[in-house]
Length: 120
Length: 109
Image (cartoon, rainbow over all chains, first blue to last red; front, side):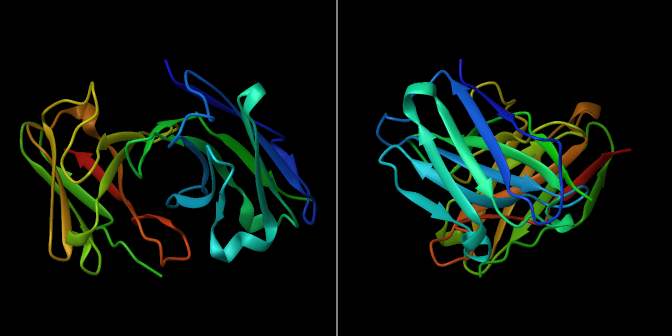
């Protein structure tokens, strides 16, 4: 059974750095083709893809946010970490981690999401 | 940047058919995936690779893709189908490699 769970602060101040952790089970990120992504959704708005890390430790970022994002993985802990620097109120959103399986370019399993509010 | 355009809302009576479109430049050349998101919940994959269904998704959900439009069709709509629906493609040239549509709210009358 594949599960993913996001964890991190619910509230961050403007200019601070956000660190989110995705802890997963039911698959290994060392298996060829496996990837984990971060996606966010501002309240009442659409989904926005942020970053992806694959089994080979290749990393991909949204071009518009690339300078602020870092994604990494700890395969032994089954965790993927996303950091986002210089947080702003417009970054207020629910942040999801999701898996891309080895068979496609779609997100087949999602975490429940974690709401991050940016406010002073 | 690749853009996917969906109608903001679709209304349908129970038992009828809902069709949700996803427009994009030559989208027929890409694989389109669809997600259902109920209020306060994470998205759930309902159709992948244009027309395939994950295990556990009812046959009432089907998809097609041609030209500049992909379509998610929900047959025999039930009250439990009321949700937001998002299309998604992968586009290597886009700022966001994984591009989501603008979303469609399906209301069951």
